[in-house]
Length: 119
Length: 172
View (cartoon, rainbow over the protein chains, first blue to last red):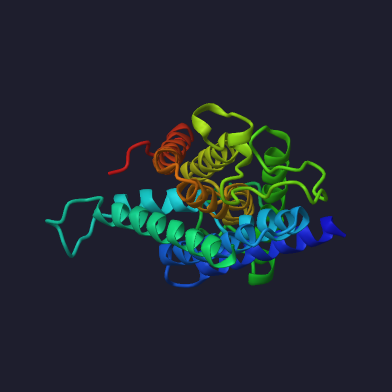
């Protein structure tokens, strides 16, 4: 039963992430959305002392599959590579650094909030 | 197929690259994501410093990153860092780099292996909650080290993979 639930939630998490990153026109904003949301929800679970079974199914399965570190890295490299043609004087890499910083700050604050609220 | 006409490589966006329908694409992403998540779970279960409570049913086991009860701290891992999470993130970022670097990777393989498998194998939620938990348990130095190290390693692994597969290893 746990295995079925893990598979179902992991599949749903990955598919939701795909909808946000590839189908939603926001691109890297979609990655940020799923990562920050997933960090908050896992913070709630962990802070609330969820059972090991819940942590495995919902935490490791659903939220682990919903969030991604690989696409986060790819987005940052893509943003650093895309030179802004409308701002030729702007230093390359600003967008990437902004994206990295925004995801990390929002993600960590979201996780911290989740832990605080639930504990 | 007419043998006189060589089949063009399945470059993304070309007619030979069969773009899957929405349902097929979702199934590819879902299947890859399940495989990646299952492997990540297994790695974190098996390696010291991963998820505590191996049988998944014990009520005494400590969920990862709850307050000051960090599994990896108790296990005494180097620098007090959750190396198993770092490991799955390195591998997933490197694999995604390889996939992106391969010019002939089809849309299907990118959905199954890239968005699905690598996305499912790597995790941002566990990373963020662990880092926030370290911060809350008054270990800001360890938390900062974990965050900076994870990001640098992820970017490095992605670029190394992309370079090894024939793509650019440089950012600009």
